[in-house]
Image: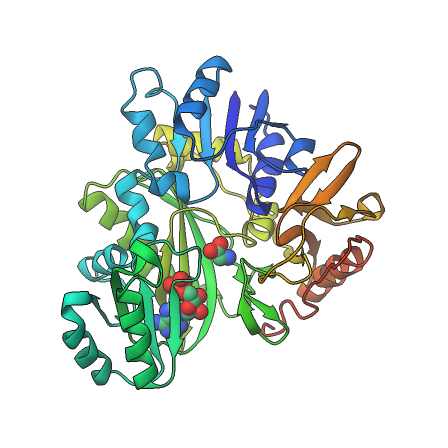
Length: 423
Ligand code: AMP
Ligand code: GLY
């Protein structure tokens, strides 16, 4: 098979690394890819949202399957674009339909879906600017802190958690006035949940499902989970508190009702579901849905899958996922993200990366990198994820840190405390 993978981050490098190992893959293309994906397949200089260019490429190069890494092409309807095109409709796209992608593209849609299907989540109400007074009244009914969420995609910045009610009212009005553009013309206000978070990934063909290894990511730039939010500074899998009892609740109360709910609502969904969960006193609740794999969670989840990923993806495409075995590596996997100095604020690109050949015993998944003649240079805030296996969490982390220290580029920064809050 020839596979086209869309995206250019660490997630896509990890997915591509696994796809390239499949016995059924002849050719792997990555659009647009990075310096890491260039080593495992062929990078194609096409944007992941340029559907017309993707169509042309797929037809010209006999692509048999398209795997979508990021949410944007899904939210813009790449699945429907293929399904509704005479020439493309026989080529499966791994990812939900445009309607299914609203689980990530609209927080209000996701909350209604959960309410309709009795899936545990924080109490909420949604408001637009002409309902401002009702919104203030709802805020007054809640206890601090107040959680305000832009309904639409806001590049990961659309959630505000505010302690003071007057401040919350001010920010709410700002959001409804367009602080995040169209994305915040509707705002979801919800009850604050207190607990520790984890990410659960589900692969579904629309009928059956497989639960992939659970992971925890570290979003803040600073140690001890302080400072600004980032795309993710590291991850660990498995997660100590997500034990058998907890995961059983996740499956019964969240995974099954989600897959059944999509079916009942007639939503075409063949792809990954990312459940952002919070453990509230032992009870799992949904903080958010995403319609793709997480980054950097993918860099620890995918290495723990022993089965052929393309067999699983074919099962998704054909609706035979239930017949395919999912085998998981019992070892830990950890990843530490090396980032550019200044990230998530302003940072420079184009710094030469050295020491990659001195890495021993870890997997390198490139995020913001670029091939530049014979060298590899930085091309983003998050640069490289250093993933390692271990019999214990600390053994895996030790290896990730050892190898993180041999890679050099001007301004390199990484958190030294990934996994600090887990047993
Ligand atoms: P989201 O984009 O919905 O994942 O929200 C971003 C982050 O805000 C989450 O990862 C949580 O850490 C936090 N968050 C969102 N909703 C809540 C909530 N209801 N209670 C507590 N924290 C929340
Ligand atoms: N690691 C969180 C995300 O991918 O959204």
